[in-house]
Length: 186
Image (cartoon, rainbow, N blue to C red; front, side):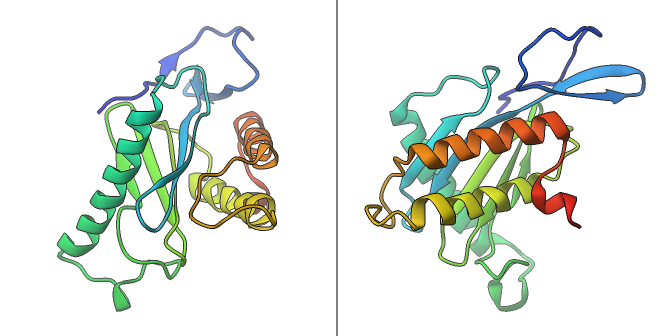
């Protein structure tokens, strides 16, 4: 499954401010995040969004299928893995499963929380930013903007403009500066 590709771009300042430019061996590359989706512990899609104009447009029904399929594959990967982590938990204490998939033109990263919620982000391959820190910051934004909302019910779709704007600001900052608040303090 190829979702995006890294393309050499000319040495001009054309393009949107959402693209991060990194000089690699004399060339200028544009690298971007593509999609974000959040899956609840039951496998239901509770949030999805395109993070770039370069990301393919995917309809709501397809997103629902992607969310439940990823949830199932995550569980199968945990069961089928020949290597068992201590107590079946990953480094963050969540259940074992898919943490990273690298394909021809994209990379998928997953952060599963202790409560079973999966934060999944796709990006073009070769990004030099700490994608795991980006996922952790999105998790913090979820806790701050969504979970503290007295009208939000856990496991239900996220319809928080505050959360959407905070994620948008985070992605813009990371693509512009190349680091997150968490990665800056390490």
